[in-house]
Length: 418
Figure 1 (spheres, helix red, strand yellow):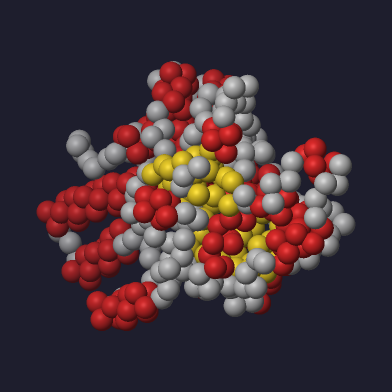
Figure 2 (cartoon, rainbow, N blue to C red):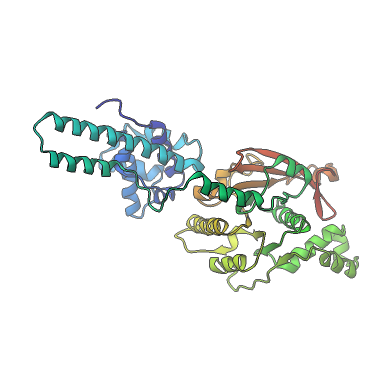
């Protein structure tokens, strides 16, 4: 039957997504018959076959296997693979591509099933046998909806009422950021990303302090450096102690102690001791859930240990843990994270797909905020240029907006003007 429902762009896009991130193959529930186009059916099944052999299904391995098995001509040539690989709109939308493919597959099954029933009715038929065929047909095309139940508007309205009554007086750190960025609210998962040495920790601590000043209970988990080293760095900046003065010990010890002691009491830290240099997921979870925190900052993602076949798989598992926590508790979790190496020289503002880990991580989060600055300022650059930090809202699940604001670091805090 010609002109059956299909979505060639979605089929090509999911193949391209798997080429870019093979872990997606394990996350999706697609079968051969869900694909309408023969070329993508063959490519997808080739990917599944390579996976069973422990071979990553990338552009090279799939191309080689299709040629070895004699299926390349059926696909249409290597250019079909290259086209799929280079035409992915966004890795973070892979679940949307799956839904489009599934919807088209469901409608095809319904049309073909109705056609078979129609042909059956044209001949001699037994009514009880027809009823059975009809029941089988209905069961075959029924979408799988495990773990789902009906809710009505009044039930949802009760949940909305609770949400509207929750505190909304969180801050991104400065007045301009709060004006340009979407509002923060409980049960949100935020990634704060940036290149090494750009100022993620400095901004994260400022974010923590400013929210603690508003009365929120904030936990700062410093996994990369000790709490003492973190707060010593803060005190040096607040008191404008230069490297030369620090080396010569030209500073007032009491002023340093006072700067640290003056931090809000509801900003708390955890002393974490680990021989391996990493801390396991269960310990992180217990730290977060045992305290009645409004905000938890994890500095940083890479120092959490998790089970996984590789680094990407570990990051995916860590991310899923965080998602489950924010679903169950009215808490904001901000995790500091890095981008993959290789694109930092091309653009200061990196694409969200360049986050270390799988595409699932970029999909999990509610907000992705990137901090960036000029890491190699001119020799004649003034203090204002050196103090400037660009803060970019790259993903906003609720409002879908992109925003950017420049802020300036001086005297241990960020402000909108230098």
